[in-house]
Image 1 (cartoon, rainbow, N blue to C red):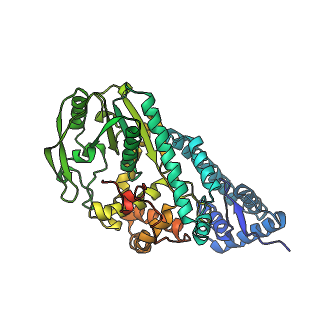
Image 2: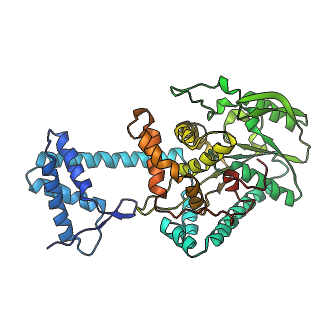
Image 3: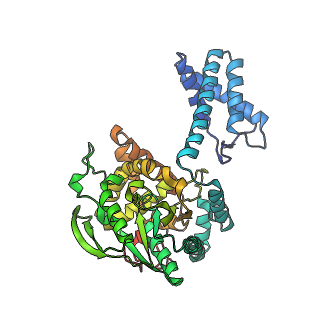
Length: 445
């Protein structure tokens, strides 16, 4: 009698529960491709595969590739050679698609693998690389310790970046702190400013959010949603002119933008830059060339920030960096932009589209990279936001125009469902980067 298989090893090395239904579905798809329509036969064949798995891998865990080899063998021996050929073609096509995706990730995301590995190792050393690990930290009463460790790591990274800036003085006149939405660019800008001040440097920050055009000038989609994620929602020409004027010692007056009304007023905030001052730019699109095209690269220091989180759920899936940032923005939008969490969820396709077009392609040009993911934030974010995801899943499940929102909501739900929520945020200090999103910060945003 064969031993029942309970787990399998995925291609990325993670161990997940075994599911015979997935085998039956794969067989049925292959059969359907060549005219078959008998799902009962696919289930019968899946049972034969399961028996062989139990006999061959008793006491061990088979890999996805090993299971697929047995599926091919079973199909051929059961007289389904045509289906077997379709299944083999399917495997080959999937392998090619994975190869193309891997190449695309290298070419577009351009995130250093060494940095990602360092993040994972740090998480492992602190027991917070999995949902189970974070739950245990909370259960053991060690949540404040995790908060302190995460804040210390982040602060050291910011300090190291600031030192690199100092090392390039006096040539550097502009520090660009860039990154995708809700990566904590604003807090990082403030903290870099603090480190420069500690070294005796003077600084000035320019708020580029005030350079948005009036909202009615932005294009709308079929849902009436404005696309203010594109860099062209900003007055790039005016930003470039103002930066050049500041470096020449001139005084400018920046606009003022009201996110609640979607309107801006020109010539409001007076700003000048002394010869011994550094201009700090905190912008989603700080790396976009048109924003600072009149300034030589030698005068710029580019710091990039991203939530390079490495936390796995119980099924072994890593939380996506963009999903981490989505949660942050859902909270911030609710109090800063007067948007409901569901509105942020449905608008997120604009955010991702803009990131892939206008931010990620420029990562390779930066001088320094900061990881702003702090594992302690996930239980805190879940406590505030998890309730919004089940209704969103149900609402968008059958809506063909909102499948992006459905898939995203389902993925976040699956990531957080087993995580212990943390209602009490008292362990999080007033200068924490996460306060930028949940409120209670000592900084003014």
